[in-house]
Image (cartoon, rainbow, N blue to C red; front, side, top):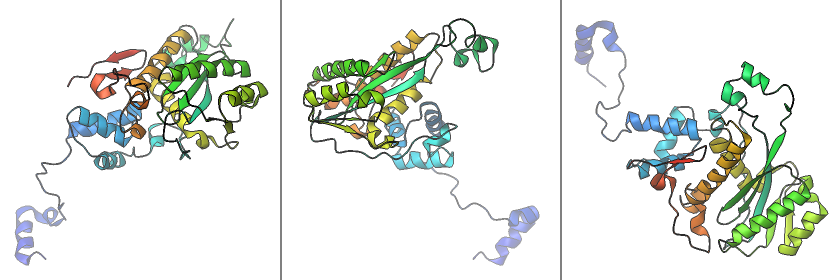
Length: 313
């Protein structure tokens, strides 16, 4: 307890205002995270939707060591500790993971993401919502631009992904995509296939697709209806694809966005660090060892639109 003389001295020095409680925090805190680092943490969280572990990894690559717990604490103070706080509607749910097996190839995860095509010249994201050009893209001949279907296959162990933008999600189209995906995985030495995990879409319930799967794998497993978390690996991939590529910038044509998806898929396999891979890209875990794999913090940072910008060290 402070002595009475101390309170009297404070009152004589500044009046009643000096009698208010003061912060017990030290004036000098040399280990405190710098303001520039805190601003960078918030910027990456809002812009890229990166997790605390990914942000800590990127800071370490740049020469600033900040623990995952410290990053989490700053995100909590900024009101960004939940991923849903960075966008209007929260759709993430806890995922139920399945046993990936000891080696690449025990099972693949398949899914289709339906996205609206980009009107010629760009839609409202390019011209602004409610502008005359944005309204004109929805009217007149050919205004019904339709949708494109992003078919994705992911290896359950390595997280190596293969994505194609196709015009429909028919069973025949899905079978052709699956065969090309298997050829893609085979180039990385992933030839063993035990199980294929899909949802209950009409293309996956088709007899022709099931016959194709059973001829290549011992089992075709469909998830519980209305439970996308049971196929959480590919659902998480689709969410990150949308956040970092599909809706991260505006596109002037459908072909431009398709090219960006192909570039981002390569970036995800070769350069983007994954926490499940020990902050390394998926290509580091495949049987056929590749030598041109570097994380984004070393090689460069992906900017949607198919451009890699080098990072200054």
